[in-house]
Length: 341
Length: 266
Image 1 (cartoon, chains in turn yellow, orange):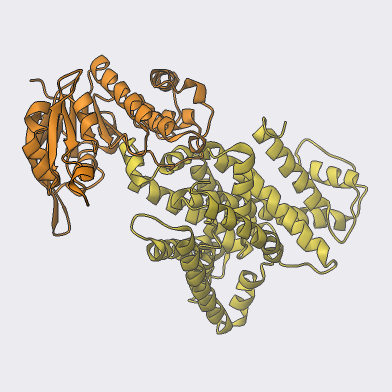
Image 2 (cartoon, rainbow over the protein chains, first blue to last red; image 1 turned 180 degrees about the vertical axis):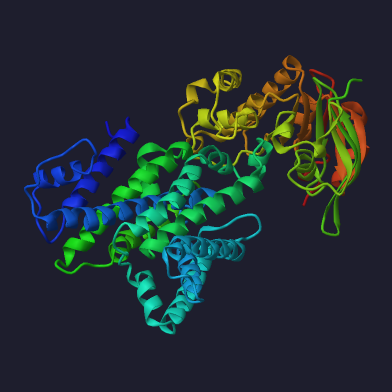
C-alpha cells in the first residue's frame, strides 16, 4: 500500500500531521469543536456556535496559519534539497549544508537593514532580497567546491559550511547594530521562531507555488543530468540552460522558506533520501513526493519542538538538527562506500 | 561514396595545446570507421568534439550536409548518438528508465514520453537483448550489460550516426565480441554511419571497414585495413615493433608484438 501508492500514502501522512498540528496546543479544544470551527469557515456551512470566541481565534488566527506556514516551509526545503542533490549529483546537498539558507538569511537581513519599507509591501518583497542572497551564495559555493568538472561530496559541504558560517556571522553583525524594530522583525533568523498570523503565509504562497511548481516540472531534466553533463548533452538536453533554471527555482524556493521561517537545516537532506529509498530515484516523482513528505516531516519536527519543553517551545531547527546530523553521518558513510546513490 | 558524417579540417585546442589538428574524414552509411592511435593521440577528443560537448577551434562537422555547430542540442542529438565508456554514472536508474532517456531529444519540455518513445525503447531493448533486465538498476548489472544498455540508449535516439568511445574497455573477450558484433549488425541493418575509437587493433581488424590512425593530434593515415594496419605504420605510431600476419579465417591483418623474451634472455 505504502509503496504502491506513493501519492495517496504521502497525502494521508501529510493530512494526519496537519490535523494533529492544528489540534496540538496549550489550550485543549475537543476534536469535534475543532472540526466545526474549521467547517464553519466554508460558505455553505453554518454550525451553531457552542464554543467560546477564544477557541475560534486560537484555531483560525494562530494554529492554522502556523501549521500552514510550517507545511509549506518543510515542502520548500525538502523539494529544493532534492533539486540541489540532483543538480550537484551529490547526496549531501541540502539548502542549509551548502550555505544557501544562510545566504538567503543574509540577503533578507541586509535588505531590511538599509531602509527597507516597513509596510506590507516591504514584507512581501523580503523573499526577493533573500533570493538574491541565495543565488550569490550558491554560485560562490559551487565555484569554490568544483574540482574540474566534478563537485565532490566533501568540498561541496566544506565550501557550503564555510560560506554559510561567514554569511551567518555577517547576518548577526547586521542584526546587532540594527535598530530595535528591525531587530525584532528578523530575530527569527537566529531562533527560528516563525512570525505569527496569516501575513507570512500570504506573502510566501505565490513564490512557493511558482518555485515548487517549476521544480516539479524539472524531473526529467534532473534525471538526464545524473549521467553527467556530457552525456546529458549528447542525449539532447541543453544542460547549461537546465542548470540555470533549476538553480534559480531551487534558490527561490529556499529563499522564501528562510524569509518567513528562519534557517532550518537537514529537512532538505532527510526527506529526499527517505523518499528515494522507498520510491526510487526518478526525479519526476521524487520532487512532488518530497513536497508532501517535507511538509509532513517539518510538521512532526515542529510538534516535537512544541511538546518537548512544554509550555515553552524549542526552535524547530534544533529538532531537525538533532534528527538530521546523525542522518547526515549515516549518508556520508554510505556515500563513501558507493559511487552512486 | 554517399557521406553521412564529414569532418572538414577539424581543429580542437585545450588552451595553447592542439588536441586535434586539421582532421578531414568521411563516414558512409552502413560503414564502421575505426579511430586508432596511442594514448593521448586524440581519439576521445575526436568523439567529444564531433558530438559537440567541447568547443571546436576551427573546421566544420557536417552530418548529412548540415553544419552541426549551427544546430541546437536536441537537433544534434537526433542526428548523432554517443555510446560512452561504461561507467556507473546514473547507476540508480533502471535499465528501462536509462534507455528511455535516449528519447530526450524527442520529448517535450516536461520530458513526458509518448507511445512512440515507449515503443522505440522497447525495440532498442529487444535488439540489444536487454528486455529481461529492464527493471534492474544499472549499478547492479555487469560491465558488459552496462555497455549494452548504453548502446541501447544510443539506439533509442534513432540517429543515422553512431559514435562509440572505446566500447570494449573493461570487457572480457566474450563481451568484447558480443558488443562489437551487435554494432556491426546494426550498422548494416540500420545503415548507420559508425565512428568508433578503439584500442584493440585486432578487434578493429575483425569488425571495422576502414581505419584512421591518429598520432599526436594528427590524422596520419586513413584507408582500408590492409592500407593502414601495416607493420611500418603500427610500429611507428605506437613505437613498438610489431609484425602483421593474415588472419587464418579472413585474411585480414593480425597484429602481433615482435620477439620472444624467452629466447632473447632478459
